[in-house]
Length: 322
Image (cartoon, rainbow, N blue to C red; front, side, top):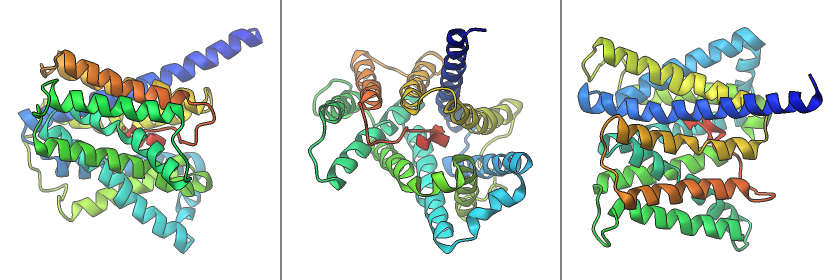
C-alpha cells in the first residue's frame, strides 16, 4: 500500500469514527425523549444511571488496558482531587442534567441545538480573558449563533416564544455547562488523559446525583423497549461514542474532529423530526443551520485558542467532550 493510500485510509477511518460517534450522541438525545414522553422516566434518574454505569464501565476498560494503578493515580495529589470533584459535579453532572432537562421540557432537537451555543460562549470567554476583541471568525460565529437562537426560540414570529421559558432556561444552562465542561479540565486532561478524567467525572457526577435521584428508585415503566433504549443511551450514546471520538484524534486533526462533530446536532434534529414527528418549520431549520455553521466556523478558525468540543457527548463525553 502506497503512502498516499495509507494516509487516505487513516483519514477515512478517523472521519468515520467521529461521524458515527456524533450520530450516536445525537440519537441518544432522541431516545431519551421517547423515555421521558412514553415511559414516564425522569431526567434525574436517567442521568444518574447513565453516568454511574458508563463511568464504571469506562474505568473498568481502562483498568484492564492500562492497569488499575494508572486510573487511581489521579487521586494522589490534593489539587487533582479537588479539580476532579469540581469537574465531576460542575462539569459532567451539570452538562448531562441540564441537557436531559432541556429535552424533557422541549425536545431533543431544540435541546441539542441550544447546547451547541457552548462554543460561542467559549470564544467570548477566551476573548474577554485575553482582553482582546473577537476575531472575524469569532465575531461571525457569535452573530450566527444569536441569529440561529432567535429563529429557534421564536419560530420566526418576532417577539413571541415558540418554546417554553423552562425549555429555554435549561437549554441555555446546558450551553453554559458545556462551556465550563470544555474549559475547566485543561490542566487535568494532559496529566491523566481524557478517558481517566471523564470516567471518574461520570462516577462522581452520578454518585452526587444519586443522593437526589437514587438509581434504585425507578420513576418510569420498564418494558423491553425502555430497557433497550436505556442500554442504547449508556453503551452506544455514551461509552462507544466517547471511545470512537477519542480514538479518532490519533488519525485526524482535532480541528477536523470538532468540525465533524457538527453531525451531532444535525442527527438529533433529523431524528426528532422524522422519528418523533417534532414540528420544525423553515425558520427553525434556518436557525439550526446558523448554529451548526457557528461550530463549523469556529472549528475552521486558523490558530484558534479553543479546544475541540466533545461528548459528552461528547459527547457530550466530548473534550466537548455526548
